Image (cartoon, rainbow over all chains, first blue to last red; front, side, top):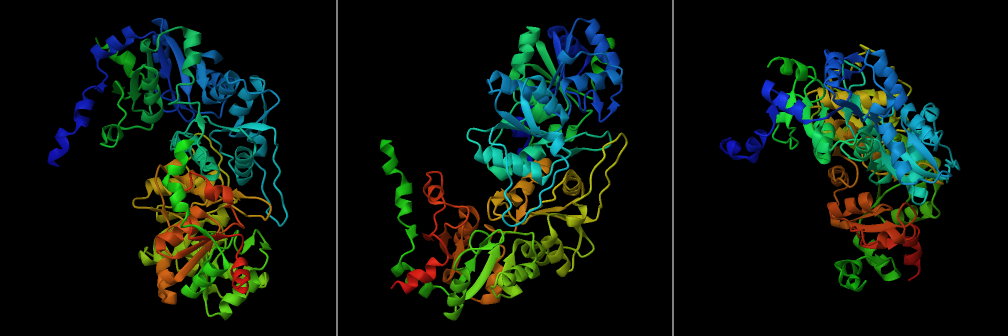
Length: 313
Length: 313
């Protein structure tokens, strides 16, 4: 392939550097906050990735703010804090920005009327965050075991006061929920269609990947022929909340993640520094593939490299 | 909106005529076969549309071939013939071309190896047609009640000899099937991803529409980030079989359907005459909407108009 070397990709690659002792020092010195994705960065399923607690502790001791920005909507912020603590990492709820929280905040900042209801195709995290924000939700876990019995003259009824459908990862996805959400979006005037995120797959267990929210969101798109409002990464919707809380310019934040099309794109969209870790869904082959158009500023194997490389100097 | 009248749409509209006594005579005289969609044309759910049996009988008595081309994959051709007969319409299996049959024929004409298996996300019709064509299928109805229990170190196992995943309308869609199909497509080298069709919604009951195969197909696209091979309408894959059976040029066939993006587009793609009936999912507002770009040659309320208008002369 003679033309290969003349492609702009080779040129672009030069801005994507492997993390090394000098550039790690430069990166750590020039940022005040590290934004971490969780799945594939902090843990895989329920297994902590090696060296994570020490890395977080060291960064904290250097005065860095730590924030966890996750697209996984199955848990609420409260449930996430519990998971972190059970794995021996001490953090507080307000250091967590999950897409379940983002969905509730989207409705809040857009003054979603309190007398309208929200239908959930998703898990407990979304329902809990909606409730904490003062909204009434339907569906979610309680519709997980419902089935449809099609018969002549049967009319599937839905609540006409549903003003938003929130779709996230749902292990209990079924035809009942898909019909319910579809009817609300198609028939309730002005009904919002909100996606927590569109990740194709994720490490729901440590050994393999599973269909992600992108699967359920696509199903609803397929039935309604509508496109959703996405509140999780790579949308920068959450950044307003982060900025409000930490008062740090985005140029002094570094987004650390394992996914190009969510984490790294989110970081770039928000104007942050970016670091890809290869401990999750992305490997070198994907990063270097000619079809890839998202390049992080830096890449390395795992988050613990940050400290190892600083110590190397 | 001053510019509106100068849009080409108004000009295109003139080729889409309402069915009238003279053009009905012309249409009937110039075709040898009528291809009918079923849902929204012959019936809605389990209720026959008025005047259908008499219309079919009259056309048959005029020497016209009748063919039923349906995207609904939940039934096999045998089950369709049974449904027709139970509604008082006498037809034979080989007058029916369903997308379930199309999926099996696609594998057959492409010499899908008999030692490979087919995973089905769909209903009985697909599994039955695959079996009749001599293929071994997995999934489908038998995985309808299966659930996934995520736990540490759990590995979801899948059959490495699956060489094709067929996705159609599935009222029993669940996370187990989505993970199974996704693993086959992502991990089994060369595994085919076949969609019976991509209809967004359909009249599964007479009173309302329900998510169609487009919903399940989109879910698998969302998880795998792959696009399927579509064998149902508007793909003209089935036309080869029709031509082989009837030996009639497509210009002497008329496709009668209620859907622009499947039926009418299929007819146009195949070079057939086209007639839209408004007894199903499409109404005048949709037909005339500026965003619509698919125009049938003729349109009318219901199939019985064909005979009523002939009698009118």
